[in-house]
Length: 458
Image (cartoon, rainbow, N blue to C red; front, side, top):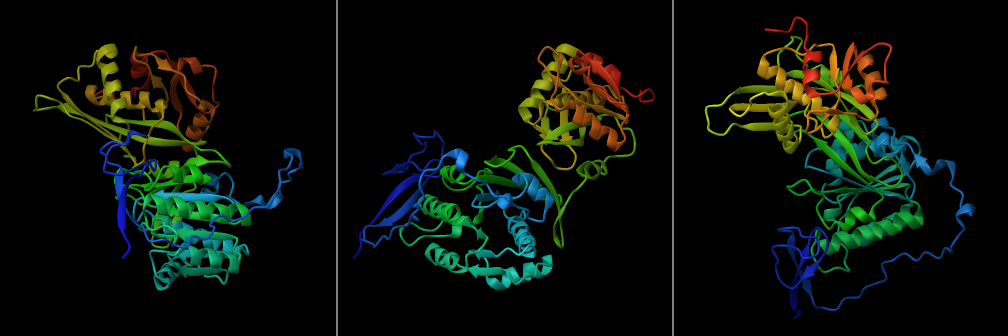
């Protein structure tokens, strides 16, 4: 009878231990060790690597073909990828359950099939009938898409060699297992080995491989951290479960910009591209001038987005006032409140402060600081920000307004949306726009006076 032994492996870095450890000594993560049961029964391990008999070449002698990139047929997805899928690359797409990972890859498969590409869709979690139902709902019909419900990596590898597809979709990597590894599917060893073999297939056979990955309860990609190092592109699929909007965010891209963002709207017929996201986000804006609202311009990749910041300030009945931040960093909010109290003289020590970003998106850029501060200040003083004004600027600890990057693009986007005035940092005073009046300000107290609507005082 085969002996069974177990080991403990860190899900983040792959560090192995004979027993459970609360903190990984390699990557210092807590609670990341999982047990892997292994059998001591000898197995016949066949060579897993694909022999690559190419020889070293001079970089000047290497010629790249014009068709190295292939459009997916979805412009927002192409934006994230840097212009399309690169042949021979491996792309990892991760996101919460039900966010739309399988949907977008099935739509991508349909777009590539319409271009005459052969696609092998490996479904490790759904049957062929279930995928067919989704394809009918999405309107994906093609004779070039092969559905293969399989979890065994050796069988998948055999079908790839037989069909020679242009693209392979693995849904998902956590459900694939190799017979040469004795641990269960989804373990650190299985994920690492299966991804390594898929990477070799992609590089040697010039096949594009798209891999779906699960995420943990903390939002991190499940499995070893080496998984993200091995692939060429890592894309995070984000969204608010209470909203229909979805965001594709590039976290790593060897062939393009790592800060691009694609915006989609989930509907009954699948994911639909949002060509003008500013119009979408500002449609939720109240038509009345209300204290505590401000419009900011933030850069998501190379795309400026106009979003509404809302703040609510009120007296608290409790000894410790509440601070709630939705869509903005909580530590950043506390810093802005400290600057408002110290540099502006706004007493918020006995006030609850709530800040919310409309549209369900996350705002991380420092240029949103000034808009957040003005929304809080105007709500506390019960005055209104001019509805035709956008707020752009980063706040320092002494209350000064620091310059921002890509201000020209921000002003152009604000002009196209119909805004007439912009509060900008004084250091950017040389940047002007023919359709927008720019008001440079040096300090936070100056910005408060410059943005108040003439008819907004209560």
